Amino acid sequence: MAKARKVMITCAVTGAIHTPTMSPYLPITPDEIAEGAIGAARAGASIVHLHARVPADGRPTQDPDAFRRFLPGIKAASDVVINITTGGAPTMLVEERLQPALKLKPEVASLNMGSMNFGLYEMIPRYPEWKHDWEAPYLAGSDERIFKNTFKDIAYILESCSGNDTRFEVECYDIGHLYTAAHFLDRGLIKPPLFIQSVFGIRGGIGPHPEDVMHMKRTADRLFGNDYQWSVLGAGRNQMYIATQSAVLGGNVRVGLEDSLWIGKGTLAQTNADQVAKIRRILEELGLEIATPDETRQILKLKGRSNVGF
Image 1 (tube, rainbow, N blue to C red):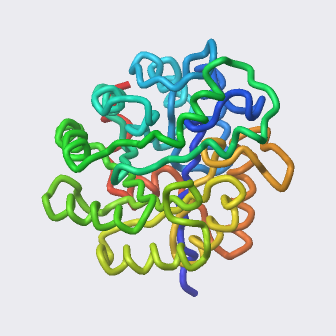
Image 2: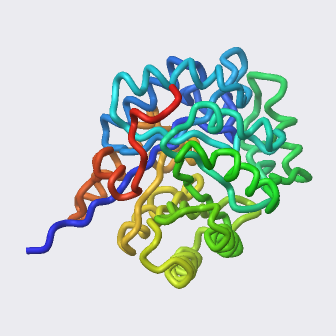
């Protein structure tokens, strides 16, 4: 009998796009972020994708010292693979967004494959009041804001981190981003196996229709053949069914409160572990096995947890 396929679960613990008001369960402080990451790992996530926030009001920050307040605790409590953002927030310059990955040298770091509109303004009518003054203007301003990652920016991040042996989670919000990844593979700035994270359902990127998922997978297969690992994330209510489609198509999955605050229709997820446990149940019902952190390191050919800078 053939062995069951191993599926990697990534959990995005807290991100820059959600504001503190939107859920009382969103991790904000270093202790909350650490607790969220450790809980997700115990539930079955082999990778945790991490942003940092200012504890006083939840603003996103790319200060490496903010990451140092929770990374050692996660590493001490779990063997989970740690993935640090270079996306930060659309309001930040690329030099600022780079600093945590550059200085802390994680096994994995995320990297968006292009500039794009990133519309969050449609969230505003859903919330009658705001906890902090910055929240509503931040979302409202997204109707004219571009997340900037030019070819020069992407090359700058890749070249700056080239000596760190960090594997990049290549985030692709549209089909053209796959071609950009192929371009940097041809230039030798990205090394195989690529870790492609396809993102569905963000206003400004590819939609969440099953045909969109199929199109992304077909294109990645044609461009990268056997030299990549495919994972998906669905934003908001798209999270679980797009993750399930990815698993059926042979891919990996990403869940977490960065991507969706919900565990079901009208019900907020109280922890990141809730979402990890739910997708794990679905995957195991499909006859799939969940990759451990060490199996994930082998699949992605990572440098190992002893070779990071924290």
